[in-house]
Image 1 (cartoon, rainbow, N blue to C red):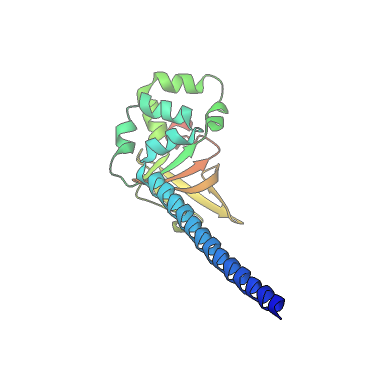
Image 2 (image 1 turned 30 degrees about the vertical axis):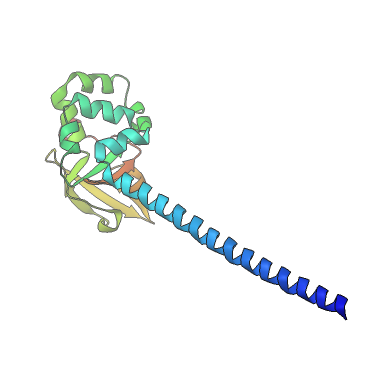
Length: 187
């Protein structure tokens, strides 16, 4: 009988101990989840705190665009209050231009500015704000047309490969091609 009481006491003590450990583990797990959530929210807030130019620099896939924006003297404008919607060609998009085109643009600030501002629209247009056949006036003064087919979004003849990169002063939509203003292609 005495042995049964000892075993029973040990079982109760073990049960209480395990119960306490489970509660502590659950509390630690909840604390860890809260910390991860706070870190993620902080990272998202930091990303939105960066402006368009800072976001493009941080992304690492827009080196040519950033170089061109700086060469055209547009970095300050695109770092300004905005809001702006930027259809941002990747480095690969610039590399796909006909040979010598990028060098010519970098040497002609007026033409470079025209091409770059053709990729920018005043206001913040998230992908949900865009519709098929929508026409948007660019900062350059000419218009781009949005096409939406089977969920694929295009700006003129460039595909949107990543949408809705929010910044502190607007939004970036990544495109796979440099789009040229009609006035430059009809000359």
